[in-house]
Amino acid sequence: MKIAIIGGGYVGLVSGACFAEFGVSVAVVEADETKRQMLLAGDIPIYEPGLDRLVAENTEAGRLVFPDRLEDGIAGAEIIFIAVGTPARRGDGHADLTYVFAAVEQVMMALDHDAIIVTKSTVPVGTGRKIAALAKELRPDLDIDVAANPEFLREGSAITDFMRPDRVVVGTDSERARAVLRRLYRPLYLIEAPIVFTGLETAELTKYAANGFLAMKITFINEMADLCEKLGADVNDVARGIGLDGRIGRKFLHAGPGFGGSCFPKDTLALMRIAEEAGAPSKLVQSVVAVNDARKASMAARVIAACNGDVKSKRIAVLGLAFKPETDDMREAPSLPLIQGLLAAGAEISAFDPEAMASAKTLLPDGVIFAPDAGAAVLGADAVVLITEWNEFRALAPARLFQSMRGRVVVDLRNVFDPQAMRAAGLDYHGIGRATIDSHTSQQG
Ligand SMILES: NC(=O)c1ccc[n+]([C@@H]2O[C@H](COP(=O)([O-])OP(=O)(O)OC[C@H]3O[C@@H](n4cnc5c(N)ncnc54)[C@H](O)[C@@H]3O)[C@@H](O)[C@H]2O)c1
Image (cartoon, rainbow, N blue to C red):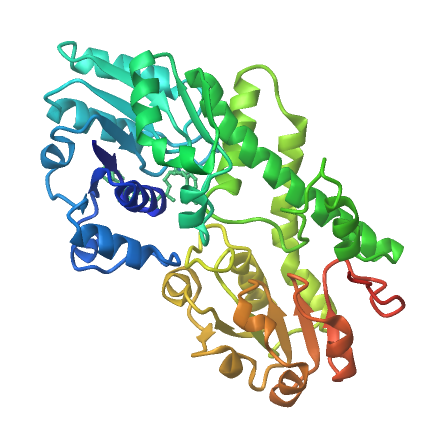
């Protein structure tokens, strides 16, 4: 089978490499010439564990190509995936579909055979129908079916998520599209990943509902963390206590500085707008957006409070910049408002992230010191703030921190450090929602 993927970003590149690994012949069409040249040279423009090897192997085997002309990419393709960005539109929070419709138009003008157009991009309900209408209008001579196949992979574990998904959702009215997509995803039958076939609108909404729900789960535990601080409880234990309940589940119950990333912020906003326009506004989703925005904006104040209300001329080491570990993605990262807030309060910032330094440099104001490693970042710091839970930060020994720092304050916005070990080493440890950590030992096991 031959397929084309329009857009070689996180989703397009990972999906393309994984489909190629299944034995499919894949052309990834990328409009950004710099990115395409990197891909041709074997350089991966994003950091995603294992992706370099997968791309290299499949390119070498001739199953994965990065053509310079769209016509060559879609020639003979049975399926054309649209995997371009759908960022939040400035001003109103709606998903911006400019790239999606531009891609569909380009494809339709260059196509010379019947095919199935499949959205992998996260698109608002009704987009599939509009794509079908546009395709018919532009090329009445062709028989084009449309399907929605939203992607649920997570950056940082994208390949495993793609290869071993909990489910694949395919929304379409077309029996032909269902059959072809079933054939494409056949390798997943071996691991019994269910394919959920639905109508177009249902598949489109399912993606937003999934992200809305997960964002709500994170926001819920963040609010519980605040409550723990007031009531003398420990949010890690609360999360464990509720997460072991199979009806709730343990994932997405880690209290932190608020969610960021390329998906949750824009998808919750878009879901809010979709619901409002449909006449069924979601108060829950509205609250999730508002609570999360306020939380991210309040992290600088939390650090300032931990530093006795004053960070003027104090050096603060920020460990982690990416919105989560195992990615270099800085989109909507909580580190951005944190650092901006601390700078505005007069602090000096030394920052380190294992992968996101290059993109962070383009987003942060001059004056931030980018340290070559975590040790250099904390050297001489008055306070250390951990905001992205990279594994290498977990291994930072409290005694070494104590020796390297000038001050004593450690603000752990991901609850990765052992509070007792930190305090035993003489550090002034502040976690999230861990008020009782001194008085009760958290029992594991
Ligand atoms: N990143 C994630 O973790 C993730 C997960 C699930 C779903 N999604 C969704 O998938 C979609 C893509 O997200 P992403 O993170 O991969 O975006 P991205 O910005 O990393 O990649 C999009 C790519 O498409 C290219 N592009 C745009 N227009 C093009 C055109 N006409 N022809 C060829 N290339 C074109 C861009 O140059 C860019 O490289 C979004 O709708 C997103 O919401 C993302």
